[in-house]
Image (cartoon, rainbow, N blue to C red; front, side, top):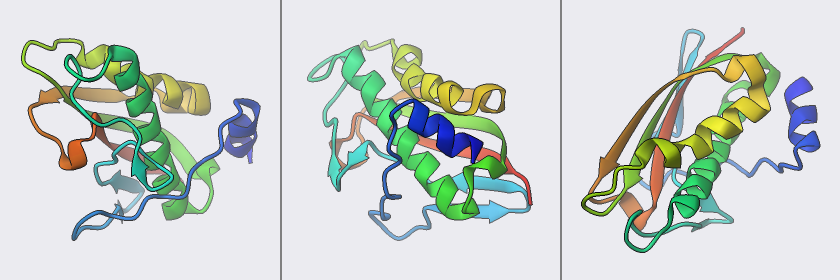
Length: 153
């Protein structure tokens, strides 16, 4: 229960894992790896940050959107494992930033997810990352991210 205690210490309430918005699984386990589907910044069933970075949204909005999407991914990992202490390492975060032409701050936006993962998982949260900007996003979400996580049996 170390991770649950860390969440409490940080004042973070892990949300319910959001339901898929189309025909896919929210996560798949292959051996000791869990692959999450793309997670949007849902909060209480609604997209909490909609629009494009560099147009309707600020970098701080994007940072918070990435943080919320990461919380949703963590909720799915908990759903897959039943216990977040089974997480051995966060291997990779793949992040997509919904952005206006000329926007270049994708890494800073996705730090919202990376910083949160480091706060919660410490050394187990050190990960590789992909940060891309895209022109359109499902449900007009600001950010989408997926995670690959190694877990113990």
